[in-house]
Image (cartoon, rainbow, N blue to C red; front, side, top):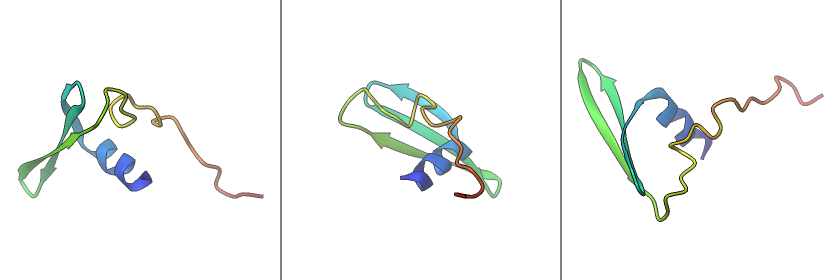
Length: 60
């Protein structure tokens, strides 16, 4: 799931509605839109839930 958070964080969040959101990416002079549908309105991808989350550089 971390890769998805990073992927969506690299794009521009657009079209947020109940249970659906879109992420727009500019690629090689063009654009693509990745549309995601969820089962509930509670969606960790749209609210920046982990935007400030950081892991330490080392564990010890």
